[in-house]
Each structure stands twice: as structure tokens, then as C-alpha cells.
Amino acid sequence: MADAIHASEVQHVTQDPDNVLIDVRERDELEETGFVPGAQHYPMSNFDSALPTLDKDKKYYVMCRSGQRSAQVQNYLMDNGYEAVNVEGGIMAYDGPVNHL
Image 1 (tube, rainbow, N blue to C red):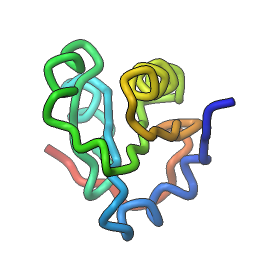
Image 2: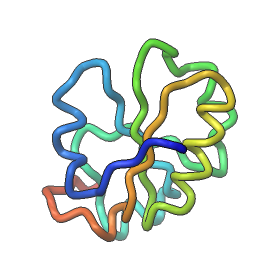
Image 3: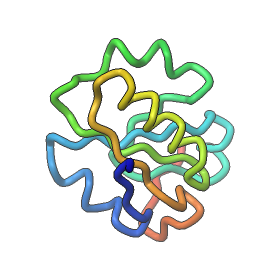
């Protein structure tokens, strides 16, 4: 079974330099709701092009709006040899600070 954390735990993720928080929402979604500070933006619609730039020694925490798309990207990452964790509930369940574009 794939690893997952709840969105309320996501702030702790970025404190470890071996962890990378990825937001796979589209740009217009980031503009609407903001994004978690420290998150890297790789839209799901163009995620294939980001894959070669990712470090297999890192652990990737993947979030989206609600946790559905991030689960798909998590599985894609794991299928390609990366360690990945889904952020359940996504930005809708996250109650911490956000940055805006």
C-alpha cells in the first residue's frame, strides 16, 4: 500500500532537506488558492517533462487540490523508482500559511 500523510502534517515535510514537496495543480489553481511555502510546482499536465530533473535520493510528497491527482502522480513516481508519499486532502485540507503567485 502506498504511503500517505494528511495535509495537516505537510508543514513538517519541508523541514527535512531530503524531502521535496511537489504541488501538481495547474497554475490557475495556484493563483486561486495559493500554495504551501517551499513547494515546487510541477503541473500534472506536464509532469512527464519534470521527471528527469528529479533526484531519486529524495523523498517526494505530492499534493494537489484534494488528493486525487496527487495519488496518481505518487503512483507514477513509484513506478519510476522514486520514493513518494501522497498528501491526502490536498490544499483543501491544509490549514497552514500559503504563498501567492
